[in-house]
Image (cartoon, rainbow, N blue to C red; front, side, top):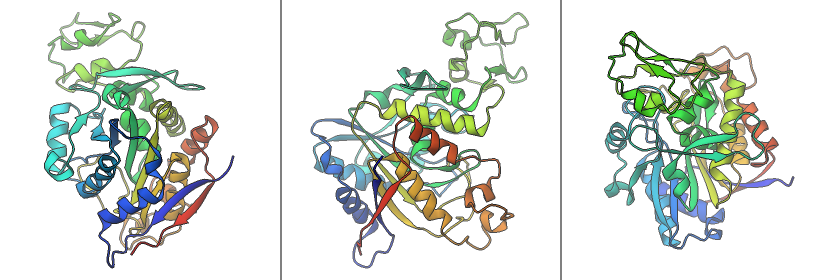
Length: 370
C-alpha cells in the first residue's frame, strides 16, 4: 500500500490566526475534492465533560464548518451519549454540557445534534465488512443519516486506548450507549440493586424478555439477554451498567471495526489538533497539565495514517515538567504507555490497517503557514 499523505501546520501565528490556519490546512489537504453541495455533513467531535477545559475550542469547529458551508455543504456538530453516568449520558444533559462549553449556534454557526437520541438508544445496526469482533455496529442514527462525515479530533491521552485520536473519536464516539457497551465489555448488563427503584422503565427497552422484577428490583437473565445495552440507556437512575470488562487490545480492535462501520460507503475527511494533550480523555470532569507542548494541526483522508502521524509527533516531544508523563516511571520508549502502562494503543492501528481502513505508512506534508 502506498503511503498516505498527512498535512501538517504548527501553531505559530505571526500574521495568521489559528482558525484561519485550520481553514488553510484543510483546503491544502484537499477537502474541496468532496462534493458537499446540499449534502448533510456530520462533523464529529467531543464537546468535553463540564469542568474539563482541555477540549477543542468552539472556534475550531466554526472554522471547519465555515469551509464546509463555503463548499455548499450543510454541516452540523454531532456526538453520541456516554456509557458512564456523567453529564453527557442523555441528550438533554449532553446539550447542556455542549452549551456550557461554548458549542452553540451563535458561536459555531451550526446546530448541535446528539447522534443517538434522548437516551442513547436511537441507533442503527451497521454491518462491519470483514469484522472479526463485531458483525453489526450500533451507531447513532443521526451520524449514519449524514451524507458526508468529518472527524474533528482532539488528540490527547487515554487510560485504555492510549490516546484519543481519529479512531477513538469515530469508533467509540459514534457508538450508541449499547455500542459503547459492546466495545467496552465482553459481558452483559448488570443491575445495581441499591440504585434500582423498581420503576420498570427498563422493560420498555428489552426486546428479549430478559428483565424480571420478582423481588421488586430489576433482574437480568443473561441466558435471554443478547447484550444490546438498551436497558442501560432507558434506566433513569443509573442502576444498570456494563458487565465484565474486555481487554484493552480487544477494545481497541472493536473501536477500529466500529470506525469502519461509520466511514464505509460515503466521503470522509479527518482533522486532528494536537494541543492541550491531557494525559486522559476529555470525558473526565477535570484535566491535568498537558504531557507535551502543543504541536500542531494535522489533516488527511486516511484516519490510520493520521493517528500514526500524531502519535509519532507526541512521542518525539520532551515531557512537560510536572506533567503526568514527567512524573511517570519512563520504562517504555512510548509516552502513552508510560502514562497508562496497560494500554495497547498500537493494536487499534494494526487492526484498522488489517481490515482496510487505511495504512500506518504516511508522508508528512508540512505547510509553512505563518
